[in-house]
Length: 381
Image (cartoon, rainbow, N blue to C red; front, side, top):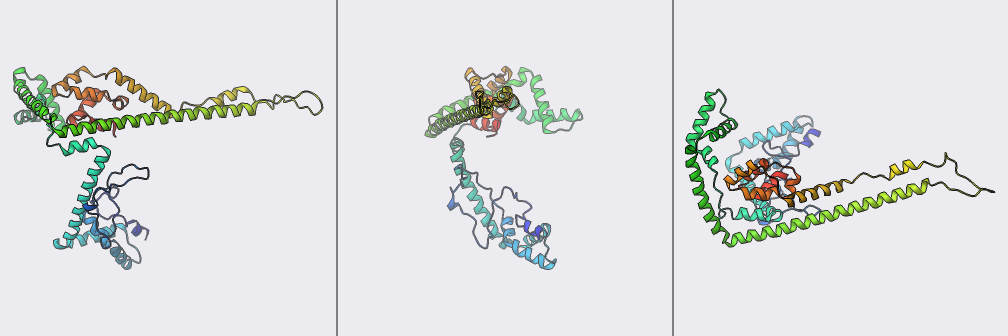
């Protein structure tokens, strides 16, 4: 029975139970429709929660049959129903279900997908309005052209030569090995061989710059710029609030340490009275030594203070200018990413994360030259 009760979670072998939201059986409630769209959940702390992933048609079907199948198996097996038996029975019934009968669950699963898409858009708008706007206008934003090296690697004839060279050496032509071979071929290529790819890159670069000028004249670009300024102001305000909180915690810790030290000193100070009737003189055994007091008064540096020092150090490094490897900078310039590389490398969060120039450039390449998405991929936020 315990196994059967534990099976009251999802029995869909294809669904991720940890990611799925708890669904009321279909017989009693409908799946949330897009009409309830921007109802993104909020945590008790007020932070916006990421929407739950949509459920599948099979999940909905299994939830409807769960109790019925569990009861049937218990009757057949002396009150026992294992999770595996429940999943097997539900799966068999789903396989035997006609397409017309499955349509009910497919429609509700599609409605839940629409709900998820709407909530995800609201979540992005709330958490990263700049990214949401860039997603909205991605068709208008010019794409940076591929570098000469990227065009070289993408050329079918060049790639075929690389695969043949790898096969001739007896190695398996995996993506990693072929990429390494392409890099080797580019490095050894003469200027005459690189020329066509460099010419194609500069031609595309010129087109990109013309499109970029036209894009910057659009109202959509101005909207994104405004959102970026507002987001940066919020970020600075949040950092200032965090710094104030750290200062307050440090001050409170210092005051508590001083108070404890003063209490300890008062308790360990011997009481001396004049000799006479009823007089009491403290003995050496009754008077603790002063050295342990000094040890007790010493408090470790709070973790919050260390975090503040780390952030301050990163900010000072960022003000002086990022230290970027010259080779990486040259490679970024060839891709048209040198300005973005300097921008991202100077961010205090990236400096504090101690990322190398090569890692920063790789993140920019993955994000298509967008600084904020690259920063999030580097620091994991």
